[in-house]
Length: 309
Image (cartoon, rainbow, N blue to C red; front, side):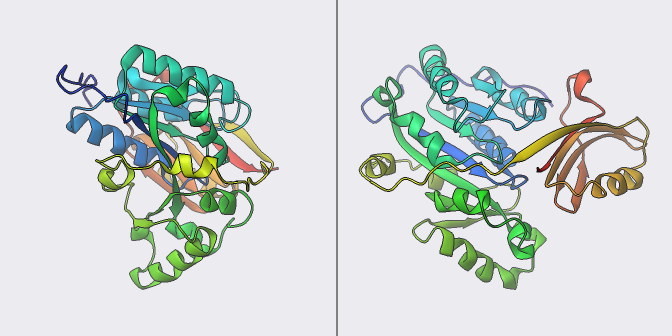
């Protein structure tokens, strides 16, 4: 894959500081498809000649999302490590966003949280000075895995808190469940987020005019600032483990080995008997696909598995 630099906006089409820069917080439970959605948003922005700044927060220290997104995101991509962006890294997020504004003047901002973070907490960063001086509409887009909802897996606690904070819910991976079940799945999510519009997607393909409205209106963030209700931040206890896989393992052996871990989420790059494979595990499903080119050699053969403590 050839890296294309982020296009620079025409001097005749600057970001309007009066309207502000639209911002998204992309959240969702482990394995929902957040990174895939963000890659789609990056591609769409580049096709429109817009500068998109992406800040990603990964649970686990291997930096797999960085390897998957940095080539596509270019200089507007930043990864925050060492904690959760919605609580432990709020000051780092504030500083990072302000630095991106001062250095590249983005037309759009996306913050991708880890799969255990809460979007409402992250959105609060956009209400702090000096971010409020240049940011515009800020929305929480929560991605939900249709297969997970259909199986009834892990729908309480963190999952429910994430969905209930959504301005927009993206029901992703709808190709993995029977079409006739989608209405029931949407009803489950609407019970958690009754006022949030619902979008169906496959591999994170959404109409970006829905998540980035072309005409700025009164910001939902302003509406939220006046709300008195604020749910306490109650993380569930999760832990990550790094796993090393020897090269030339067969795909069948790899899948069997990973399924035996019974992890919530598995992600990494493995050199199998059929070549390099991007490993994406969500619950019992383990998918192998062709990874991006030019991956750092140090992450090959290493996986991150996330489970509850």
